[in-house]
Image 1 (cartoon, rainbow, N blue to C red):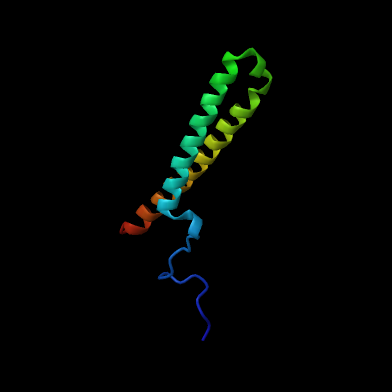
Image 2: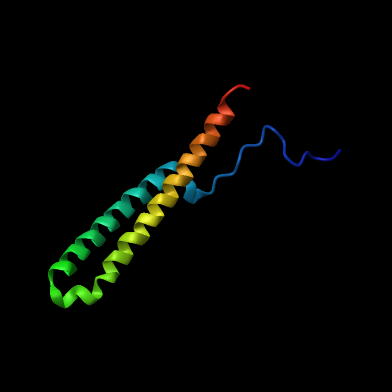
Length: 89
């Protein structure tokens, strides 16, 4: 007897790094990094000697914002999938 390729009872595998608490920790850590980058950009903007290096804190802030958007999108999509699976047709 052949096994079914996609049985109905099998749930989707979620890797260890995609769990809810870890994603919340990652969002909080990226918020701290974004605040650090924004503070660095403000300091660099006030000091004329640091203006050529303003790209570094802006890059840090932008990258952490990108990670935050990615994690939020993943959590929202996973929540929508869970809602669809829980509803009766």
